[in-house]
Amino acid sequence: MEALDALLNRVSVPRLTDPAPNAAQREGLFQAALRAPDHGQLRPWRFLTIEGAAREALGELFAEAIQAQGDASQAALDKARAMPLRAPLLVVVIARVQAHLKVPASEQRLAAGCAAHGILIAAHAQGIGAVWRTGDMAFDRHVHKGLGLADNEELIGYLYLGTPTSEPRTPPVLDTADFVTAWGE
Image 1 (cartoon, one colour):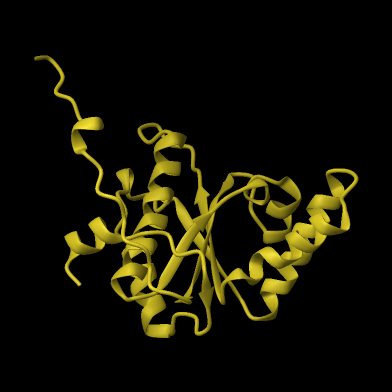
Image 2: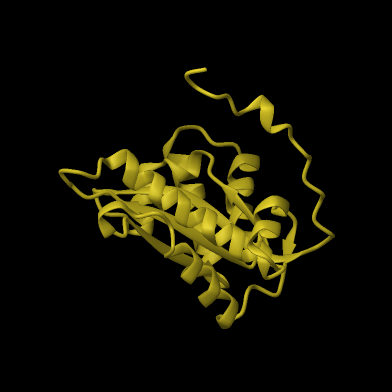
């Protein structure tokens, strides 16, 4: 697949099943991530892969976080436990924010986000379904601790990856004029 085709046609694919990406495909995903813009070559990102029984453990971590927030209904706990089971592989994207004179924290977060986007584009190019999710469990301190995030790390998102259960939708064609204007004319 050509790069422009991948960029223009990638869509989120939320319905995923086995198999997960294989070792060669994963290498391509992470190599693409490592090409993200990186001012100062700080490499302000890292990734956790979660699959198999670890997905159930993540669901328990999510349920613990829901319980710690207050009165959680059984339905909310069941939903939290099921969230990581929506795909055979999850990649947790983490920004490693470092003190730097010329590279502000916001730029480092954006670089980690670009790395996540690189994974999504590489997944699409390889025929792998993928969707980027956040939600409350991306910002919960209990979840961060359970995943082993350091004080200088922030969870950017969860990438769910697997085999699409149906043909991905066609992306809408947007008019660039709605988003682009010339300055100074």
